[in-house]
Length: 73
View 1 (cartoon, rainbow, N blue to C red):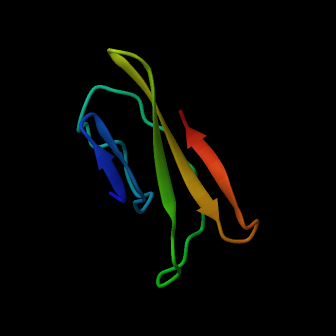
View 2 (cartoon, rainbow, N blue to C red):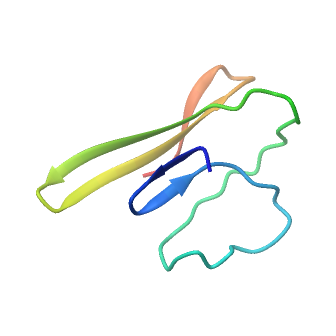
């Protein structure tokens, strides 16, 4: 986990198995050939839309393209 909040988390893992059944919500994946020792950057934003709803978005910084990529919102 790189970033976490009260309803979820965002980060990276070795793609060697199925989702771990941590919860019943959705999940998104980006298959990327990351390298051990290479810096990885993650960003989560939170945008309240009304008193009971918030839009969370997860971004990954693509090292070769040198830009933030939206993974899920």
